[in-house]
Image 1 (tube, rainbow, N blue to C red):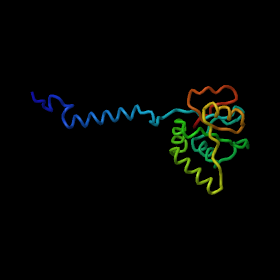
Image 2 (image 1 turned 90 degrees about the horizontal axis):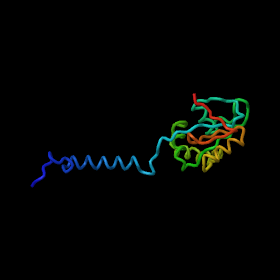
Image 3 (image 1 turned 180 degrees about the vertical axis):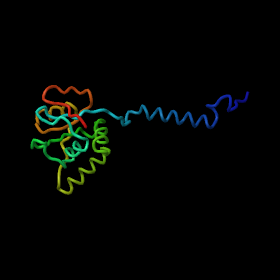
Image 4 (image 1 turned 90 degrees about the vertical axis):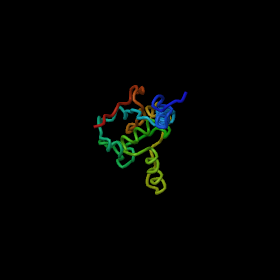
Length: 157
């Protein structure tokens, strides 16, 4: 018995191509290295009087274009390690750049002798601890991270 393409579309050339494309798409959707749009919250020390900033103002603090809060306190941004998936989401949403582009910016600043990047912490808990102990600190952590006392969420406007 001969199989015809109209009876078994998965065996036709178009069907095989469609099946391969579908399997590739599913593989990419579930691959462990996939970049996801992780949600995050921006946190500041609880004693900081600021309640909200724009994305541009937050970006300026992290790029050290703004170095102090409205009350004169020195700003102390803290980043998550570049391997943290939430860092990519933060970089794209706040800076409008991929993490690699942010790292490139900091390399230029270091080599020109103008500035050094914010410290990087390995975990969200380390970022929270840093923000608790530095009055001018600003950081970000994945949504749902336990913050405890001494830290508050900064609203984006």
